[in-house]
Amino acid sequence: MLHGWLSDAEIEALALSLRVSLVAVGVALPFAVGAALLLSRRRFPGRGVLDALVHLPLILPPVVMGYLLLVTLGTRAPLGHWLDATFGIRFVFSWTGAALAAGIVTFPFQVRAIRLALEAIDPKLSEAAETLGAGPLDRLWNLTLPLAAPGIIAGAITAFAASLGEFGAIITFVSNIPGETRTLPLAIYSAIQTPGGEAAAARLVALSIVLALAGLALAEYAAWRVRKMLGT
Amino acid sequence: MTLDIRLRHRFPDFALDIAFAAEETGITALFGPSGAGKTSTINAIAGLFTPESGRIAIGGETLFDTATGIDLPARARRIGYVFQEARLFPHLSVAANLDFGAKRSPDPLPPAERQRILDMLGIDHLARRRPRNLSGGERQRVSLGRALMANPRILLLDEPMAALDAARKADIMPFLERLRDEARIPVLLVSHAIEEVTQLADNVVFLDEGKVLASGPAEDVLSRADLSPRGAFLEAGAVISGKVASQDDAHGMTEIGFEGGTLWVPRLTAAPGSPVRLRVKASDVMLALEEPRGVSANNIVAATVAAIRETADGLYLDVELTCGHARLLSRITRKSCERLEVRSGMTLFAVIKSVSVERHARRGGEENSGGA
Image (tube, rainbow over all chains, first blue to last red; front, side):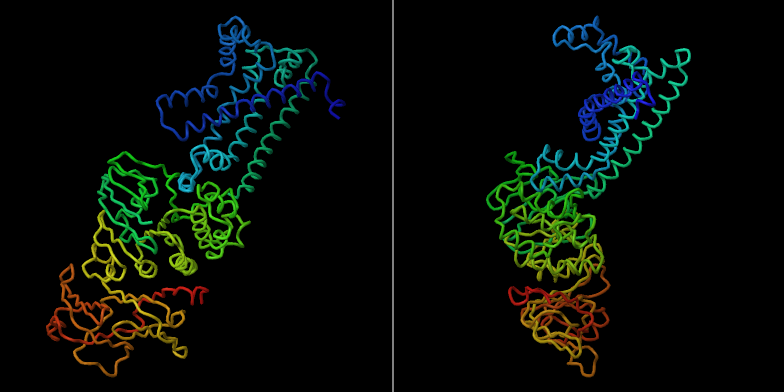
């Protein structure tokens, strides 16, 4: 169906976008849960620094984030070189780099949603679980995470939608390579730069809008379903 | 298993300094006004609050002892805690809530015992429901069941009825009475409601401003005239224990026999022979030198003056009366006292209106356990 409407290159950009976003959100999710737990539950030295670090991508221009990634993980940077030489992991000019950039830039969305959900949980429930013999990990797994599930899901879907639209960090870090790092926004940008590409750009813009709206609707729906399932 | 507790803690606004023991079975009430330190005390027992110093032991086992550095975490104490607001887990069904503690108990109850708890609390049919679809009384019963299913060594009830309206309270009271009669572990009930305590407690620890003012059998503690700190918190009165002697269905009255005679009270739904506890407020007891005739009050009891005390505010006199082993308290003015020349040792007639008696049926063991 899509073939009649979009070109192969455009479908490729769509598929790549979905893959990059899925990996970005999936890999970042456990870290986001961890960061949200630390920020909502614990008082520790360096908490303010962690809070600031988590929120940094929200306030820094994405291009700056992309540049910082490039200078730390580029093949000539010490860390990037080491990863390449030791594990053969190379982010630059690769879709995994795009996923990394998207994951980092959308990290704050996940952390904020999860943290709100965690803070909404009545701490008295945890006390009750404790008197019933549940230790800390037991309570986390069987009480806290299930109760925070609506927030976790909402955060993940929001981050997914936002990462579909990530442009600056990706193009700065991993460039604009068709089939490898040219996600939807980059494809739109390329189409606009190409003489006669307006029609292609318009199609991709429409697609982006539909995806974004679908993502938002899905987030609401999923959160509603989970809330219903949890009976909260 | 008995509970021994001694603890001290300094809060910014008051100091907790208490010691008491709770019996092996039956309900011990921690009774006192709000802010007396009741909840801090049971939180310390449960391990949810760490006092500065003290010792808490159940049976032979020490749960907490600052002298030896013992401080078992709450999850290892095996103490059942029923909170004021039930605190059921909203994402789990009633059945899963009930299983939560049972699954984690090092000494789980056999299925027959678990069924007995479900039957006692009448919650078997709620198994598949969600907590949010339960009434307040049902929630408290499930919460009670959840605590008992974990097979705790002691049960703590923190004002289990405070969040319920009068109808829901009446709903859950019979279940608490059954719990008292059937539980094989010590139960500690925190309450600031005299009705609850009169009805349920076998022993009372009276707390105020972080200190134990009195402790002992409920009849004794709740009958003491000198325990009305902060004015109106505990209106002076006396507790009488007796048994249902007869029912007068035509008039909707019940006759209660006690050691000093009989009392007619508004109808109690309890079979003849059932133990009953009544609390008669001192201000509801009138005194007469001769047996009065032609009065509307149904109850006239001959009694001996044991002592006369000034009330804390100095305005009135509390006359302590004995009839047999039972006690009554009458609050009168100085003027009445002088007019009647009330003295220790003299015999008087106490006049009690039926409608003023606070009735509290104590369910008897077998014969009435089905409820009425």
